[in-house]
Image 1 (spheres, rainbow, N blue to C red):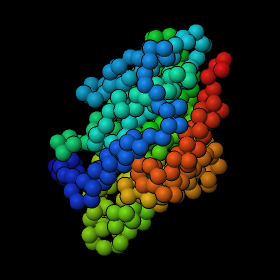
Image 2: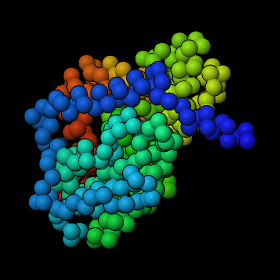
Image 3: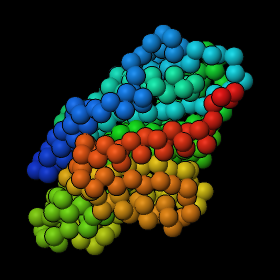
Length: 330
């Protein structure tokens, strides 16, 4: 009975003070990026065309209503094998849809990759979805994606995991935490502005570094909601909460054999704390991972004020794709 009571306390947590701000700011950051699109960005964001290949939509991978994916298959279906790029959508873990990344996925397909957007169950006040359950849905989806590609005549021999914001976190979790169980070798991860770890001293933009009862309660509420576990203010104060956050903390899974990584973060991000991205950078450096880290010095979560750096990031993504997942025959 005691276990059930604890579970209910976690599941019934509403979007409270700080948590609601977190969600709204995530969504706002996503909107701002797509509202300001420089001309060069069209190279990496193109409308779907049948000239690129075939698009299969809403393929199922589980029993949940959201358990569907879109598969972008390149025109040339004669190659022995193909690289797969999975790009996961943004939305603060509470909103968004795979269709929002259709132009990025179309661009990847136009380059000769099999590309895939995956939906996952979004958190609401009436369900129990959290970052951990969402990451497990992505883990369950990957074998189904490979099976669907194989059925269409596209054998997958390499995999890149990518995404934006919330999707970036989920992509990193698969690339660092779950890669050993992947049905195809994960060779690269890339993305932008995804939360990478949950040290309270990094989350200063929410005041979680203040060492007060209010800050401990706030951190316990938000982190517990994200992890799907009951976390107390005492655990925040003692540091014991970090073990409970490990399943959704990409930084904690980085090792010397972790995949090459390309990331971008905004120095003035009020959603994903910038200090957490520095901890990610340090972990990649300490473990000798081949990585490129881009700091947008004038931007927040939307990376909207550093177009030159943003362009460098995208050019580097393309270079890393060419290096670690070259298109056969290109």
